[in-house]
Amino acid sequence: MFRAKAAQDGIAWKAPSRSMLPKKLKAWSVVSAGIIAVAAIPAAAIAQVPWEAQRNAGAAPPAPSPDQEAVRQRRADQKGPRQEVQIVPAVLDNYVGYYQLDGYRVFAITRDGDRLFVQLTGQDATQVYPESPQKFFYKTAAAQISFVTDPQGRATGLIYYQDGSERPAARIDQAQAQQLQEKFAKRLKGDAPLPGSEAALRHQIEMFEKGQPDYDAMTENLATITRPQVPKIERDFALLGPLQSISFRGVGFSGWDIYEAKFENGISVNRILLITGLRFEWGP
Image (cartoon, rainbow, N blue to C red):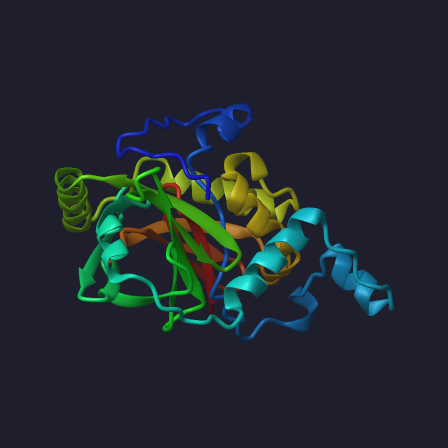
């Protein structure tokens, strides 16, 4: 779902002042998805964000910003039809290996004859298909990967494309990959939130409620992805009403911290992870 910086487990974040939040939250990023309508909200409780009021008054929609247009074009390209091409199977050996996506997850690239498979931590291996000697696409999702290579053709990293984003993953060796896998397993078993995750979630909710998303706390690419979604996110927060409490529910199988945020008119289930992002899922 980036110019993500490598983040470590032990980031210290001890009740910083509001003025320090952007700097301390730089390793966190925000993106929303999977929104479910809140049930049984009285009409009187529904507030409108500025654009909603303008639209209902017959105003034309605002023109997309250059960032919004860039995301739209990338998303359209990623969802477009792909054409499988023939490549020399031997080139696949240059790509086999491990690539670190974030603080826990790794892409494992394997070869089976003339077929290439990609497996992200916590997921099944999936075959990808060549659209060029260096770029491959999934048939199970509107997503692609391309390999960054050295002059000898050996991959030094890859880029993962999906939903308008482009996320780099640097190549690592097998020992490093094993360490990350063990770290991930330990995190799941420990079932404790990452330091600062609740504070980061609360901060972003508060800023969205004020109509002032904290883009400084996001990575550059995720800020670009978030901007087009802001009217929708703010509208949903207006439906939910004021935030009342946040409680930790556990660590998801993908390594995300899962919180339940209780609002005056409903609840949201929020998933947050260092580097990767924050997801809001609304529910009654």
